[in-house]
Length: 281
Image (cartoon, rainbow, N blue to C red; front, top):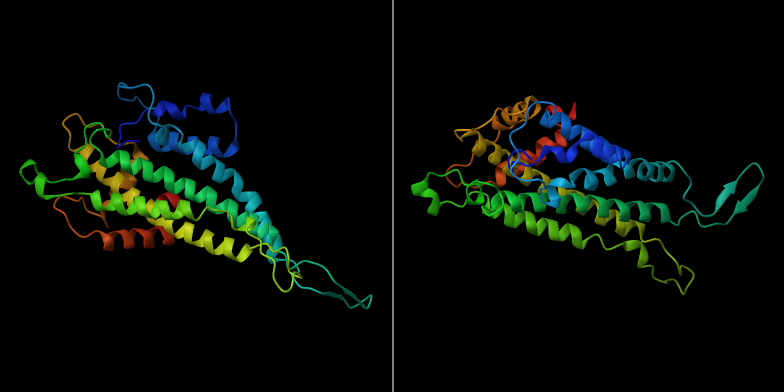
């Protein structure tokens, strides 16, 4: 939002009281806090941002609202009997059933990968806006920090955006629900199966890809904030964002002249996995 000079009024509490899904209300509240919306804001030069900014709480909120029931499905499955047959020793009975069928896990994983891939797509769209001088409201093309006489020799975050688009495409491709592809095997004894394992493997891949997209978008947004700070009319960052910008600068200096960024992207992934920054507290 800061790098793209977005309109913070899109996250007004009164808006979300009119459509009170808890997840999107929570995301909007986090954004209001991070952006210090109660403080005076710069004069608005447009009423409505593009959907990838304006609808961020709505995209993230669906994931937030779904996590509890997804977790419930997984925890019940982990703490239950998946065997066949089930032996009732006290009653001396052998009970033949279908507890091997992983329908809840298949549905949970198919749902999770859809929700998470939508986050990747959201971030990919935001990054595409950041690098495009037609839509980033005054930032240099590809977020290059090079001086004017060196701009033609430097490409900033161009390759990062291309890679991010590819990761997002792969994540979206993997949202095809595995649970609808049941196959009949074993002479039609196993004629309806959950495909839960395939769904889980797909979900892991989508999570990995989305983490990569998040790392790339984080570094690009941080570069955008740095470029904004160099402007003569730059406004102070909200406290939470200023602290995050300072923390990121310790590991990720601004990109002025082009350099290989793979190592920094891998380090950013490591920091995300470690829950390194204060926003995880």
